[in-house]
Amino acid sequence: QVQLQESGPGLVKPSGTLSLTCAISGGSIRSSNWWSWVRQPPGKRLEWIGEIHHSGNTNHNPSLKSRVTISVDKSKNQFSLKLSSVTAADTAVYYCAREMDGFNWGCFDYWGQGTLVTVSS
Amino acid sequence: EIVLTQSPGTLSLSPGERATLSCRARQTVNSNYLAWYQQKPGQAPRLLIYGASSRATGIPDRFSGSGSGTDFALTISRLEPEDFAVYYCQQYGNSRTFGQGTKVEIK
Image 1: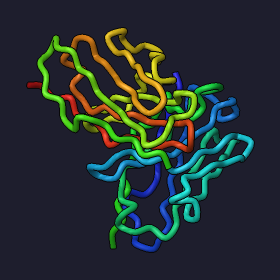
Image 2 (image 1 turned 180 degrees about the horizontal axis):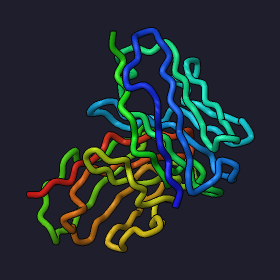
Image 3 (image 1 turned 90 degrees about the vertical axis):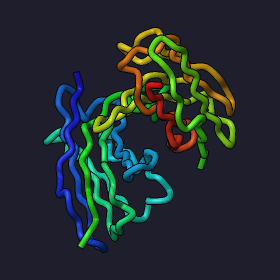
Image 4 (image 1 turned 90 degrees about the horizontal axis):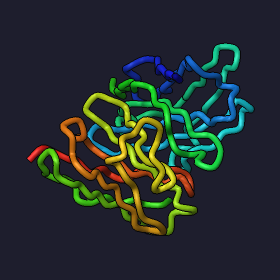
């Protein structure tokens, strides 16, 4: 059973950089799956941030692309998110998730429990 | 970006009743790449349906998905107490976007 666990600061100052890590257990980041970050602002819909493959290839939500960096650490079986120039609008629960393999790539079958990140001074 | 609109916003039903949730896209969802998720308070979303009509592993057969093109539906044939939650649709044929959710509450 694949398990994902997000970690990182719960409070980030405006204009700073949000940094989160997703540790994978019960599975390997070297699998053929893609790995994603999704966020949910309080009371709002889910928003896809971006994805990475263990090869290092990435794709991002165009609305966030210029601020997002997603990287992979194969030796630690984890992947990470950096979101720069944050504002209060970036306050959200951040989830990491695994995408289904093959034909249904883009659909999320395993999720972390989520971590709340608040942007405030 | 493909915008997904779910209706109704809230569905008030009793256990044992049938629930039908709608998800409409502003443009065609490629290859019916449409998924449904269930989310309970304080929990991550759980995948129910992918490919518009395929049940994910371990999902009871009272959950079914249908539709194509721009109009999709999730049906729960007989509501169990644990089914009262928020449901989201998601398309993954062109980037990935989510609907705003439908809350299924106990009447």
